[in-house]
Image (cartoon, rainbow, N blue to C red):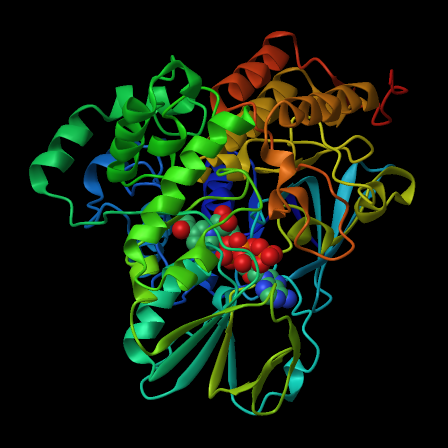
Length: 542
Ligand code: N01
């Protein structure tokens, strides 16, 4: 058995930065990564058109000024290959690879109370022991199971956007089906349409998508951005979504319709996820206000798509705008104006089965050469509970989370000493620029470990009462918004049988960061500690 101070699972942005920080503390750490390269999301999601939807200049590490000054992004929204190059550059620049073990999937992790150590076992039976066990496994890393009968019977090629072939796929001359219309589909459909002889999109729920207005970055813009990086990053850290906020001092009801439309037009033209949503301060809390923005976007869809029936099918009407993740696209709606692109509304004509030749819906069978599943992920909890994690008294994390994830600050779990989650459920994570949230969590964890060392503590565990309070707060904040109204993956609603609980923290990156800072200022309130010479934790106060 190999022994380290910390085992980190995952070599995406979170795992890489965690390793860098732990090294800075003089701790020994090993990263275990299932893939054979760094990059996490950007290692796996290689589908055509994959890009970040937070601007590249924001969607990058801020912890090293040298790094952010030297790296050159070529476009407003970087492509997957460029993001993967960036991840590799970070790994090389900080000499991370020597502590990353690739091709290693963690299967089990159990806490041993007598030694206060985690015992970790990989799928191939290799074992490790570590004082600290850190899950840096990402929020969208386990593809949802294909729940359509007959999927395995299809005679043609099948692809999942989240597990795309390395060498790419050329759909030239093929009849292609895409199932799903979330962000992955919306980014890939225009590119697949440009290759395929015929493309049919099977849509269950239309998504709201805004234009990215992607473009190359010009040198002057980059120079100016870099000159003000420090100030910009600080604004991002204390913002709602991890990028500087737009001022929101008015309700959508406070202005005349013409002014509102002009404001939405400016938001639409901004080419970002939040410009339109932050037009007014009540778009995510007031249904009537939200409807004004939703209808503005529907009218845009109606103006872009030539066939009124197709346009209406593409218009989302079953949930408030912003309650499911907004998408950002390049030519998505206009793609449906091409004669070889077809849309099937599977709410009207449900998919009955995948057959050897194609897809059968209630109105007949269509034949395909290839099917692309863009059907999403077992989000936020999937990758964590995929590992059999056992805390005190053999308690399984999967069992503890049976009715929905429970964490303190999205960082720790009562009953699981010395376990940390990076961007876990109950933290802003997917509601924010992930990199900003990753940095905040990694820094909080490394500062905590440093503080524990100074105070002679070997074990940290969240109090049950603190966890209960945090879970109640996460729910209360979510319930004050419109977000729980949608059947979204935020709610676990996309995975049959998954508990319906709003998983991320919607209170905003800045307010969340302040709460984490307050916990530290109060001497890590809500946590209890045990020292090296008395490893058993005192009884929980909760
Ligand atoms: O997955 P999704 P995704 N039959 O869950 C449909 C991030 N991301 O991979 O809504 C028919 O959004 C499903 O329908 P419904 C981003 O946070 C970021 O696209 O469940 N349809 C839906 O339309 C994003 O939100 C970027 O009714 C079925 C689609 O499949 C998250 O990842 C790019 C079905 C799944 O959409 C997930 O996005 C890509 C079935 N049986 C992703 N099962 C960036 O730009 C599912 N669907 C950074």
